[in-house]
Length: 178
Image (spheres, rainbow, N blue to C red):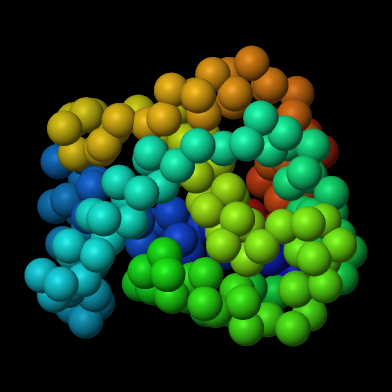
């Protein structure tokens, strides 16, 4: 079965945003990877730092789970695959999302703009990731929006349902381990 649109898009976006803010202990391992073309320019590093700050401060709506779960389920049912967005900025990811004609009707039916979709799912993903695996050195990560932390911590059943819908839940998923 193909990977979920949102899971891939979220992973690519969160990875790109987190690259500039890896905990100190993880940087040497990344430097040993064989692909040397991954070096970011100072401009790219600055853009990623701005994006991480933007996502960390973004406030998820109170009805985030009620709105996002149906969108993710519809995307999954439509078999929509994400565009490849490695090393894209948040704005580039939003623009790429806006250019997906098969995704736009789903977002419109659920009264969500491409910007809201990308910001919401990226903020959720980053906040959830940091809560599950806090950075070793917190100075490498801007403070997360306290509202989002509370929202996620007080809605664990919804978190699991959303992760499950995205293909990353811990319940009986039978996706390949790749």
